[in-house]
Amino acid sequence: METVAEHKLKAKWEALTKEQPHLRIRNAAQVLGVSELELLVTKIGHGVTTLKPEFQNILGELEPLGKVMALTRNNEVVHERKGVYLNPELNNPHVGLFVGEDIDLRIFFSCWGYAFAVDEESRKSLQFFAKNGEAVHKIYLTNKSNEVAFQQLVEKYKAEEQNLVPVITQTPEKEAEQPDTAIDINGFQEAWVNLKDTHHFFGMLKKYGVTRTQALRIAPQGNYAVKVDNLACRNLLELAAKEGVEIMVFVGNPGMIQIHTGPVKKVLEAKGWYNVLDPDFNLHIKEAEITDSWIVRKPTEDGVVTALECFNKDGEQIVQLFGKRKPGIPELTSWRDIVANVEQSLKLN
Image 1 (tube, rainbow, N blue to C red):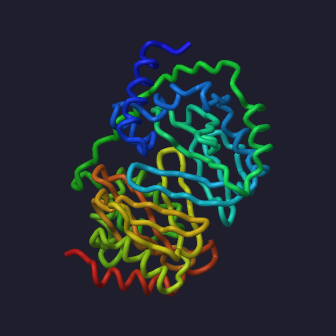
Image 2 (image 1 turned 180 degrees about the vertical axis):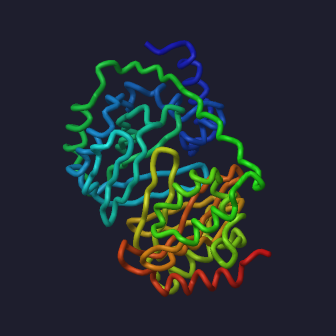
């Protein structure tokens, strides 16, 4: 039985859909002032099935689905990658991995709360949501997927109680940034210069109590962090496509980071979004929402690693671009060349 509140919300959504038939559920939720999760549960029993919140087990059984489309997004950037979910590492209750050439994920389970199977107009998917009602990750079947394996997975993990009333927990407010005067800037800069691995950067921020954007402001002298115009992301994607430079594109939210490694070919702007539209990789960037862009260099045992990092108005990282690389292999010279080109033309004083 749906509650009175659910019934009212369902009616509002139906009315909104009649006014704007192409409005996506995420945008409808924003218009109605609720979470995407709260909208989705109004359709339980009508194309939406509640699954048991056994996230590691479900993810561990994705390979038989065959080629699917993985979608991870934040408010500003959408990352869609087709492939097979291979090489899962899911034994750690806090952090999981998929490390494949196509599907490459870093998973942070602490915020995960809900799982569903969704069948909307014959488009089937698995959808995972955080405790705050925001979508963490979605997996869509393609015309090359195994629908029988999908149905078997749904039946295996179908929750006994379908009438889910989600308890939405608010995301804790971020700690206030310390003033620069409270930071051991010399110690921080020395630690940066002596980095041996890019993965140590986050630990360094925590050690010195520095936010990501603050770190870029107080970076060591030289070209360790260079602020550039917000056209930098577009320009780098265009140059990578033109020069055939293979890149890595990281997009994430609190529960997931999704990575594309390889070329980008078809790039274009449409309706305020800048896009990569390749057969197995799509990227959609709401350019107007990029507030800050930085070229960031980190020393490692394999030489300097160079990235473009883009942030929203809240100082949250929304997309990162690297040259294609693996541990033990130096960064691509061709990547450094196109970054230098962008830096020279778009550097901000």
